[in-house]
Image 1 (cartoon, rainbow, N blue to C red):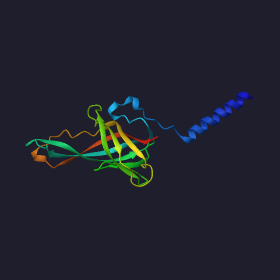
Image 2: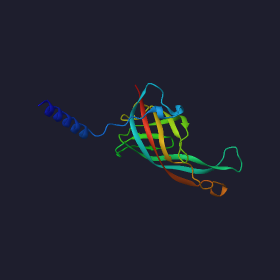
Image 3: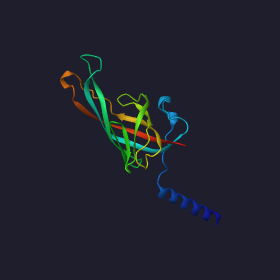
Image 4: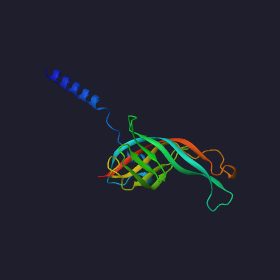
Length: 180
């Protein structure tokens, strides 16, 4: 009788776990370079995967006559939760993270750290106070990690194509934090 009750309880627990879906992944600070770690006193409140485009423009280098470079213009990405459902957007300038509920914030870059070759760097951003109320209200920091692609175009940038824009694909995890 005890074995039957134990098996029934285990089965009920397993069904409950399946009904509520997988537990959310918690992002570990330990695997990140110190420069892009969020200060102590903040907790993860949302994890998203951003996928979209980054626009670059061919421009003259400042104070360097006759030299040109691809300059980051801005992102345009969809933010999806871990199940693939769109929960927001990321666009700019200025760099803006916006929830589907309309709440949004802009941010100021605090630090970057190199990612693997061919990928934009990891980044730590301090959030400005959110506009509107909702998921982005109270966000203090956002990290860009696990980056794929997004680097400046490989094609030449010079006087003949100055002002031209190129769009490159990228993906990154955006991890949102609030103070505890």
